[in-house]
Length: 424
Image: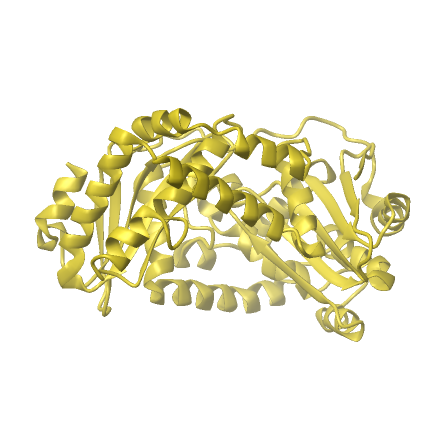
């Protein structure tokens, strides 16, 4: 692995993957929805659309034509704590991919006509989100659990915030936040570190002046609600969608691998307790799982189930029993072994392509500032002990639960007693 910190603060990390003919490049920016002031909620995602609409050197059509001409892929995504602009190409076309990614990050025009055009596209995306009960549920759950904290806001923003966002405000946000000291360029594939540095200097050199001041601190000191709420979103849909959970660990917590094993055993696969108890043994739901989200200063552990509205109470009762048993007794030896095996397999199999390796590099550098080898991570997973999982389960699963429901219910009073008792 190669790593260089340039005078501007831009970090360049690379991994040579022998025997492949592709390369993946991603510019990771430490800016996400949590970094937006309330009037600009959704700005990072809005910019994800706009940066591809044209630069000082290329029109939107030229950007598309150049990547299509080499059979490559160019895309981006936005999360609560970062955005990533990435490309996947043949190794011989890496210089073009680096140049395209650097160009859209450094010199996007944000033409007023494009701002207005993409506003309509983003509003359509928000409408699509609102029409998908599972996506809507996740945003409602984050808002209920995290309260006024910026992490509780939807990544897409709201129809009101996007409608009210002008070009000048977006441009200021872009220029103030999308700076080299917040960026990591990650590249994996049939490459050399020195060649990548030359490409960066050629494509991004005009933005690589030395840092002139400290990076402003992240937003997000508002109160986190932390549990004990029940929120209902009335939707005319065939299923009831339930998500419940608690605050968990931030991504720097040394127990994060313990939490990973707990999550795998709780709802991470077909042998998990939730899948076996809710679906296999009782046939109450088709989809049921648990998930962990870890941020810089907090995290969540959540459970999802989608079921017929008349079965919601029974599902809630089974989930309550599963969580209570885990909090009381921890995992069996067999569950512990399966949980570790699931994490090990997921880690290794997830690194079979250059895009996955690039993502691992970028996330590690941006969020941790260190790079653990695969064997080091496997050793940490193997070192997880049953008593550690039991202790963490007892700590987390006894916390007050927050739950959200999207379905054909007019109010919380219409929900089954098993669910309201779960939150009490």
